[in-house]
Structure formats: structure tokens, C-alpha cells
Amino acid sequence: MKVILKSDVKKLGRAGDLVEVSDGYARNFLLPRGLADEATTGKVAELKERQRSQKLKEAKLREGAQEAKARLQGKVIRVAATGGESGKLFGSVTSAQIAEALLEQHQVEVDKRDVKTSEPIKQPGSHPVTLRLHPGVQVEMVLQVDVQND
Image: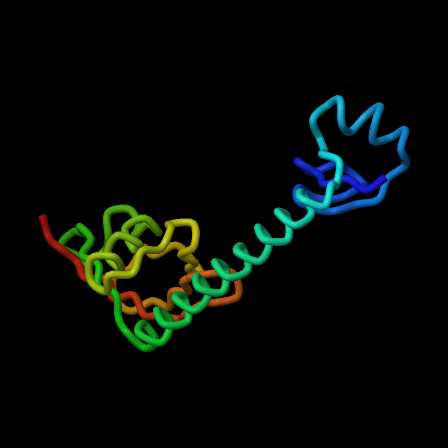
């Protein structure tokens, strides 16, 4: 029997997959628990349309990320951090601060989890930063940290 999985099933497939299973497994386990639907012609056509629209949406997001990468390549992000007389920072520059500065200065929104630094930024000056704009699309930028004295 062919079924369309509604959620991930271990050792069988992911949500949205069309899989062939034994009739008993489908009737006694998958269907009663709401893990799958029987694959009728209408539901299979609906699944294919959903997959097609998902691919189009994914391509559009990837294209937007490529455009943002082209705009950001070689640019500098400036962040002002508080520091003492000696020029050392009080604490470190966080990825959230970097993401906020990127949005403010270059109008590109990036989640703080997608900002990667090679090490914690605790010194003023230039630091390399990698931004993940989309899976498979990354851009290298320079972070310029300036010290504000209190």
C-alpha cells in the first residue's frame, strides 16, 4: 500500500514522502496514529504541487541570498563597544550585536546564530566574520570594533 507520511517515521521516511509499506503496517500502525494518509490520486497530485511550490520558494530565497552576498562582499561592519582608558573592551562583541549592526548599516537581516567568528572578539580593531545567509551561501566580511570610553 502506498502512503504519504504526515510526520517523520524512523527507518521509513520524512514528512511528505510517498512510501510503499505493507497493508497491515499501514492499517494497524501508521493510519490509526495519524502518521500517514493513504495515497489516493488526488492526494498524490496535491503532494507534487506542494513540492513544486516549495522548490520555487527555496529557489527564490537562494537567489535573494546570492544578491545579498554580492552586495555585502568586501564591506565592513562597524560596531562601537564600551572600553576603558587602555583601549580594552569591557566584555566582548556578541553575534547579536553584529547582526543588529548589519541590519542597521547594510539592511540585511541575519539571525545571530548565523554569525560566525573564529574566536571571541575582545579587542578593538578588525576581525574576520562569516555570515551564513542561506544554506550553502556564506559571505566573508570584516568587523571593525571601535572603543567608546565611558
